[in-house]
Length: 191
Image (cartoon, rainbow, N blue to C red; front, top):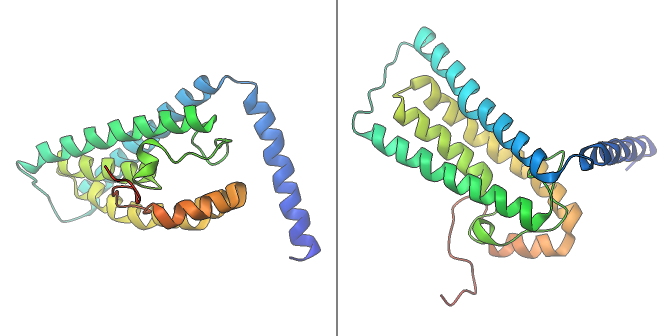
């Protein structure tokens, strides 16, 4: 790392430290509720609405999911419940919010995080697919197709390196035992 890169990294850490101090003045539960409502409102209402609107105006294809609409609603609801539960676990056990700029301070490998490393991101993508089916929307379905690689890149390029830096060997061990996306029974569980 060159001196310039090191200076930029140090400046980023100082800025994030100052932001953390300002955010720390707001009670954790208030921050978490604000993030939850704002993020879900944007990612599950505003963006899909725009995708559906553009898709219905620009794309020549139509989609009729028929009885799969109910499956879409069921997928949406189940992903929303797991998303909410995982967010609460991360906030309570991790002693912090669940966003990149206000991360938990403690490593969490319990609850949904025992089964999947990224239940929150997986559930967001699942909710978008559920919306595409529930609303028979080509635009939202294309949003889902774009969201999958974007979520993967965000996790691999941003989240995992930051977690490895913050939690070291504990996180490296976790990577060996828990799958990134597809939930499975934790290794070593006799249950």
